[in-house]
Image (cartoon, rainbow, N blue to C red):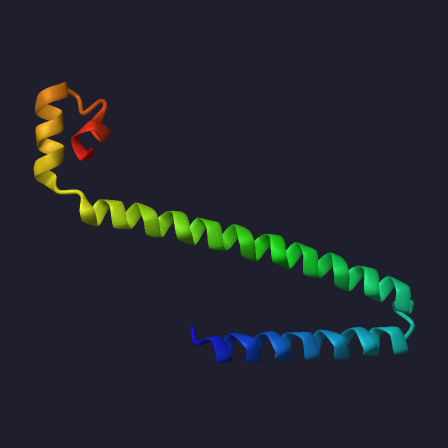
Length: 93
C-alpha cells in the first residue's frame, strides 16, 4: 500500500473519530475527560493489535521465504542421513 494512501486513511480515521467523540460529548454520552480516556484506550488497543498483526505477517513472510529457499533435495538428503529428518537444520548450514 503506498505511503500516501496510508497517511490519508489514517487522517480520515482520526477525523472521523474526532467527529464521533465530539458528537457523543455534545449529546452527553461522555464528559470530555471520559472521551479523551476512551480515545486513548482505543488508540493503545489499536496500536497493540496492529503490532501483533505486523509480527504475524513478518513471521509468515520469513516462513514462506524459507520454504522457497529450501529444496526438496536437501530435505531428502537430511532424511536419508538422519532417518526421520531430525536435526534437519544441519542440512541448511
